[in-house]
Image (cartoon, rainbow, N blue to C red; front, side):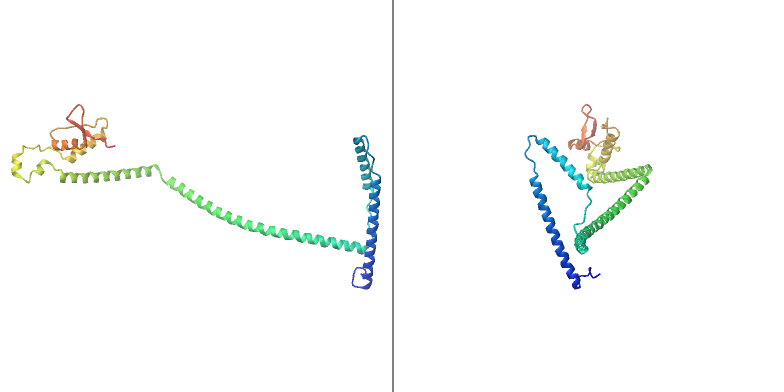
Length: 266
């Protein structure tokens, strides 16, 4: 134990002796190395006429020397336990320093990987929430699509048609009110003046109003678009017929002047 502990005087002397022994060994090894180098220089082959043969000889000699070195058992350069212990301590300290550096690098990399993992997990959770929302929306649309049967679609179409017809009737009613107010039948307009009524010729009681004329023209065009003409008879008051033709609302037949049709506005 006294040899291992460097606290005592004997251990200090042992340390100095070991240092001197180590220096002597180094000098011997350097001297041996110098001797070997000199032998190598002296044994350099002279230039040969055949370089390939010289290279082969050198390769054979190197292989033989390698086999010889492989058969040799390595010997310790020094047998002093103190020197070996000190060398082992230095090697262990160096190894510990390298391991500490490796541990530090691994911890840094571990922290970065942990941060990356947390970010990836957060991103994964967000994507899962989006996927759940998309699946819910898709399922809801699928259920709504299943609920919409042909009967419901037909019912919706009938309701829309009914609304359009109601709107059309309302428009026609408004148009009839306007026409009855501003363009009434001749007998309605002549009741305010009895003298003028006695002076006018007798009017046909079956005369139709301008609203009925327009309805007849529109109905004829919708029901028989290949023959949209309406025949003019005594029921049509000539001034109203002329007004429709003059303002481009109706068009007269090219061959029969007693037939008119509604102008195509589209």
